[in-house]
Amino acid sequence: MKKYNQNEAPLLEALSGYARSAPGRFHVPGHGGGRGVPEDLLDLTGPGVYSIDVTELPGLDDLNSPTGVIARAQELAAAAFGAGRSFFLAGGATQGLQALVLASGRPGDRIILPRNCHRSIIGGLVLSDIAPVFLRPAVVPGFNFTAGVPVKEYDLAVSEHPDACGVFCIHPTYYGTVGNTGEISRIVRAAGMPLLADEAHGCHFGFHRALPEGALAAGADAAAQSIHKTGGSLTQSSMLHLSRGSLLDPERVSSAVRLIQTSSPSYILLASLDAARRQLARRGFDLMDRLLEVSGSLRDDLSQIPGIEVFGPEHIDGEDVFDFDPARVVVKTSGTGLTGWQAASWLAGNYGIYVEMADRDNIVMVLGPGAASGECRELALAVRDLARREGGKPLPPSSGLGDFPDPAVVVGIREAWFSSTRPVRTEQAAGLVSGEWVAVYPPGIPVLLPGEEVSRAVVNYLIEARESGARFQGPADPGLEYIRVMDI
Ligand SMILES: Cc1ncc(COP(=O)(O)O)c(C=O)c1O
Image (cartoon, rainbow, N blue to C red; front, side, top):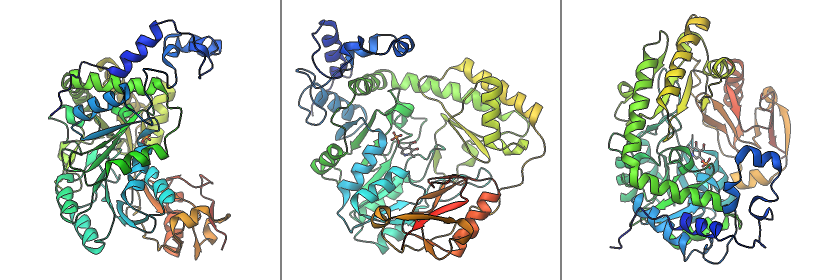
């Protein structure tokens, strides 16, 4: 086996060598190492970063055909993340997930995936003309967000669709929960299909035993990770890993990654991946240990606030919530009479504290390698103040929105996406075919995809969701007074 020295950062070092060599810069980007960057931007950022904003120059390799420092940096990443092969991505985990769809099958094939999958995967279906077989995720009682898909649903799906070209799991969800990915991988493997993990929120898992098992370690064939979310790299920079012995053909994956990769990937982003990998490999355990201590204290402080409930180990049920990420702090605010949306905007307006996400019942905080205990104490004090000043009677449980409808597919998603659409009042859309993607939060489920029938049950569900104050993602009209339907 090849030996890797995780103290190396070949790409970062090559870039730093180039910047120090006082080069003549007659190449893109045309700002000449920062000289042409607008002054107000320069004031905000400082000059340093522009010296490594370069292009494919001798010694700096080429992401789309790597043989030098980028190839070496990717090999080091594969070793650090327990992968057989890793790809640096300049287009987010989105690019990795879409590449996985493209590399798994061919037009007309089927792929099995949770209905609450990220929209990038839906985009992958449009690009590839691969048809979805959806699995229904469980909804966590009380907190009212979607969790994993029960193992038996995977079991049933692979036996009903033995020719499916792959199976997706979300490991973890945005809320930090993971399903029983180990068991799912055994079932999917036994059926001869690759298990593809959306691990956008979980790149830190492999670096501490108190965190859930990483997707590859649990048996997935591939995992797309947003290193920028929890791994310390810069926004957009991500990786796609293939397991050792992955059922996917690495050359097809590589070709799919290139197909949807910009020809001008940012060296700043790529260098940040190399540096973040080195930091995690050298000090990941200590960083995660500190992170867990900080997030543990934050959970303790928050759970003592009247009306506040923190999602924690007591909510693990061994099935839909098989495990959860203790670094992700999900706080139910609806017990104080405030929606998560109200709590989030109150915290921003009164304390200048910005949370990652809010839904009807909860606010969600992302803590990563940059988590700071002082900042967490301020958050806990602010939430206490919020509950004291604004709190009232708990909100009633949200209506039966967990009982989402299952629309019939009338037209394939790719054909529907390319067709012309027109707006109709949502109340009058029953019997028509959706021309857009409509997800309802909570619980975060796409109720409609392009090409699906807008049945009476769907219209009723959407109207009920609208009237209960739920929010929509995807539709051209965010208030969903109108819905775009196919012009057929
Ligand atoms: C569950 C999930 N998967 C995939 C993605 C896409 O990741 P990226 O933003 O790195 O493209 C996201 C982004 O928020 C996500 O929440």
